[in-house]
Image 1 (cartoon, rainbow, N blue to C red):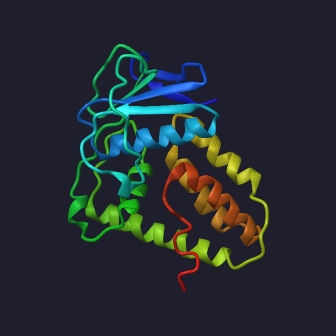
Image 2: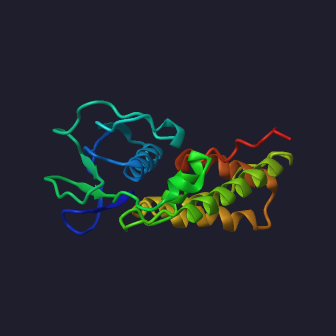
Length: 218
């Protein structure tokens, strides 16, 4: 069961019930807040919810694998996502905007920035330096190269233990750092390359890092 830290109560709470989950991103959201809202959308969808994500975010964030938001939605939202710590009347998740000089890192893959944003507890302040962003880029490249190598092996079913471990982390207040650590753990595990590949494909639908993008390039 997906549980999130509700800013109103100060503790983890289960999501409101129903087939449809109405998710609203509050005005003024920056990149980190949008990435967290997108992760929530993906995880809730995997749990069987139909997610309607609304808000008034300006700009095109699709390079970061953030889907555009639908207009409106404030009044009947089940969960609201805030980037400035606002306390609102209703279930509210707070993902403070990132600070730091990451934009000075040069020609970064936007998904390396997404990885760096995910690799920190979403409710805590995050100073995203250029060095941290470049390190995330190197980590992402390493995963993609590994996945491309695994794709050359025989096909195998996904490893359910690793998949379940990562999904459990995400269900526990969107613990993306722990879910990402599962990928590192699995990469060094003694399991078939084909199983690693299928597990990555399964989990990347939640993480949104395009980990299969290097397959077939060389």
